[in-house]
Length: 194
Image 1 (cartoon, rainbow, N blue to C red):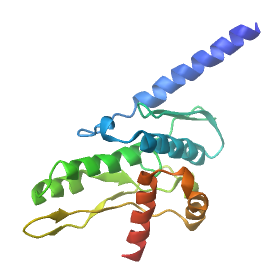
Image 2: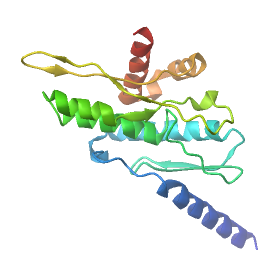
Image 3: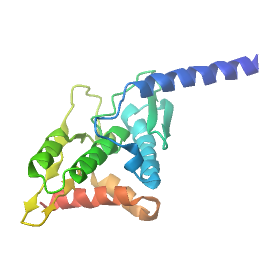
């Protein structure tokens, strides 16, 4: 009896995981092979931290595989939230990385870089500041500052800032974060200054 309950629980969890991860596909142009393994792990850590904040009342499933970036977020009420509009989620990091990869594939090509900027529509909602309003689906487009001279093209992307509370928590132990997350924090700080 006990083993059948455990088996059914595991089966239900795997079915929910499949349903929760099948709804998100990588955007065209994203190459997971170009992302450092440490960054992939950081993306999954952020995803797992954000899922409970989105659900508010607990989760039944909260998983992320750093080797594939397949993730599952199922709230305790069996709902599967759309995590795409939120920062600090796998779709958010994939969007930013797609932008970086797009810019890298268009060196010295202002028109190509403009297309990259236009396509970069990454989530900006802060999950810890979320209310239960489902109609709030704001997102922000990454800002691209391009300075071009005869020999080079410089680009930078800016990620949305989070609340002071989250920034303080994130900054309390910087040693556990990868370079990618640090770059995101620096971009957020730069955006606040600008």
